[in-house]
Image (cartoon, rainbow, N blue to C red; front, side, top):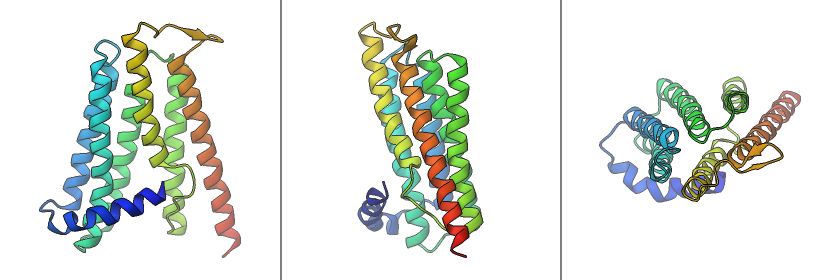
Length: 205
């Protein structure tokens, strides 16, 4: 997803130069949008249209999350506190969004806990890698791929609920549970990639 990161930087730079909001204010706005999106996903099982509303909010929140860093750079307002706030907001957003979608689609509790653990550990290893070696790497499976999945998954949930297919099972798993297993697998791949990168960075010292 680093290609899109570069494109967003290029597209948003003119707007970022004129933005009246501080980077930290944009970070908090993105967090608020993501929390509302998580609430929509949680309630989507009863009102399917909220899955689509959550996708719209999540998309805007994701763009805002990218925009805060661009504003910080072009307006020369980057700070350690802003970086800290951004990472904390990302972890809160990720946890809330995953929990909201899984609980809203009836994923069994043990899979929900496994999904939350994998998501949080994936985010943590990325943050810790940056904190330890002061290097950002976007080649591994990261938050961009995670957010893309959480745009696609609620669309599937909307289709399932509106057609009455929510309870269909394949090898004892519902479709949202199969998607949860896929999300866990992708998160584990990202974690493994970061451990491999950490070992490579250590050897290059």
